[in-house]
Length: 88
Image (cartoon, rainbow, N blue to C red; front, top):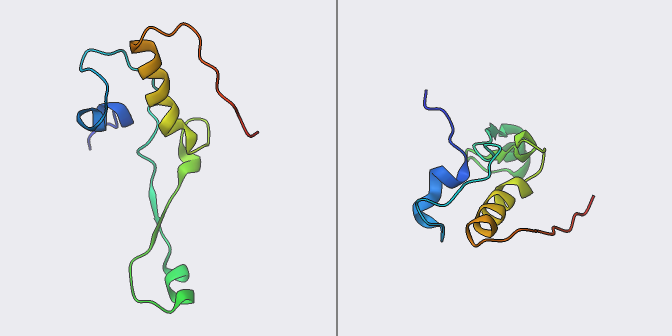
């Protein structure tokens, strides 16, 4: 089984982040897809529905994905301070 390298290393070629840019990560992303057969039944459809369990990220939030990119990019651009609003 391949170890998860974090979302930046997994998708770096799709990001505007240089190959040698520093990465700030808690190895976010790579959260499991949970089968939801009862949900499909309740909808009356015969499809394989899966739900992404974003609470399995390091801080328990889907925001981990975006923040690793934002902070890594800010660091690469020379930022010394970053401010982030939080909803809770």
